[in-house]
Structure formats: structure tokens, C-alpha cells
Length: 166
Image 1 (cartoon, one colour):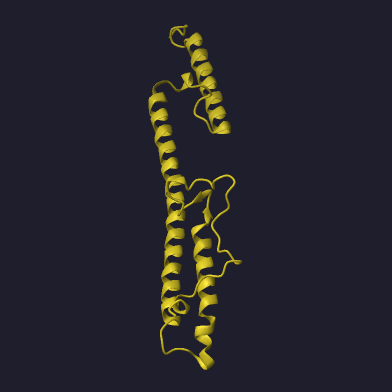
Image 2 (cartoon, rainbow, N blue to C red; image 1 turned 180 degrees about the horizontal axis):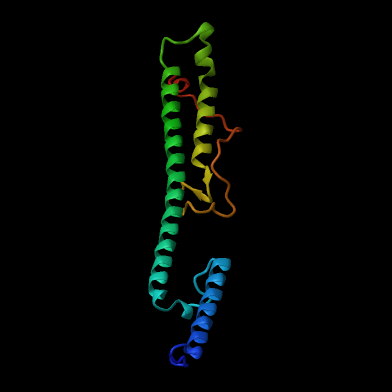
């Protein structure tokens, strides 16, 4: 039996080993950097798939951010409107005739309680949630320049409705 170059092609064997070393170096780079390719051209046939996946992930991140913002605003609106409902029922209960308390103390404190409730309502309506005034309508993004938020004027007393009857 004669052994010659045709049985053990030396050149082909070195080529295969060199290609395997290049592939091994490429895999080590991918493992070390966490990236599949260093340039978009290196991605080959996987480029369209990668770009579409990136686009989908960006859309999902945008949707997630919008959902978080809406969730924050809705929870604030829910808490504010629940507080308004509580304040309304407290005001109705405190103004019921026949519940004047000891020495008519309920009716004596009713104007100051009403003013405090109005001030609380105005404060709730002027709340800034993540850079937006939710009860500000279409111009709720920023406060107008040169203006202050609404407030209850302490210098001007509020008229008491039952005192105007006479």
C-alpha cells in the first residue's frame, strides 16, 4: 500500500483547521461582548430579523412607558375624585339642620370648614402630576407664565349663604 498526498491532503487539513480557529475566535468575541456581530454587515441573513425584532422591542418599550404614565394619571384622578366625593358627603352631613351640636358649635364652625374644603379642592385641582396639570384642560402641560395657581383668598371673606336671607 502506497501512502501519498491524495490520501492525506495536507493543504485541505490546514485550511479546515484555520477556518475552525477563525470561527472559534468569532464565537469567543460574541461570548465576551454579548453581541452576535460587530457590524451590521457581519449579520448576513439574520439582519432583517434582527432589525424587525429591535423595532418591535422599541414599540413595546414605548407602549410600556405610555401605560405607566396613564396608570399614574388614572390612579391620581381616581383618588382625587374619591376625595371630592368624601368631601361632598362630609359637607352635606355637617349642614343638616337639627345637628347643631353642643351650643350650636357645628353651625359656628361650618363656614371655616367649608373654606378649608374649598381650599383643599383647589389644591387638588392644581396638583402637578409628572409635569402635567391633569385638571388643566388642553393647556394642562405647563402653568401660564406670570400667573399663579388658583387659591382661596384669605383676605376676602366668603359670604355665608344663610346670612344673606335677611
